[in-house]
Image 1 (cartoon, rainbow, N blue to C red):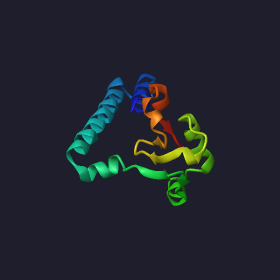
Image 2: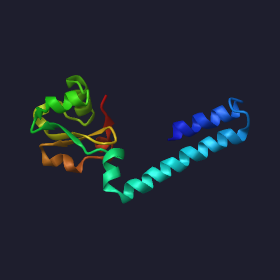
Image 3: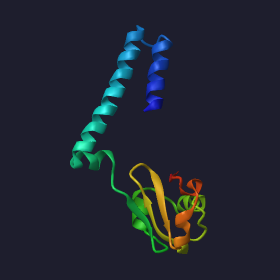
Image 4: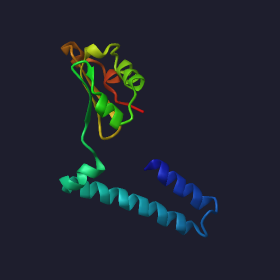
Length: 128
């Protein structure tokens, strides 16, 4: 959203539009639709399915789910890269890995001791 607003503002200020008001109208339209979709999503589970899809299981008990990986265009190397970013070197150490609706990957390791990791170890990483 920030990139869209910045681009709209840049075009408005660089005389791409006939007036500054044209750029301002575009920015207001972007902000309105962003707010409206968020508002509708919170109130409708049906709409939520389209605006924020369910997580997709990529790894279960150390085994990659190839069918889900292929559907999401995730290669084995991309998956291993994300696991390494989470401090995991082997697939056998993964209880589950999900591709979230936001595009980030959540990784749940087998060992319970990782629950006390620092915030930097738990940050989300994108696949693809």
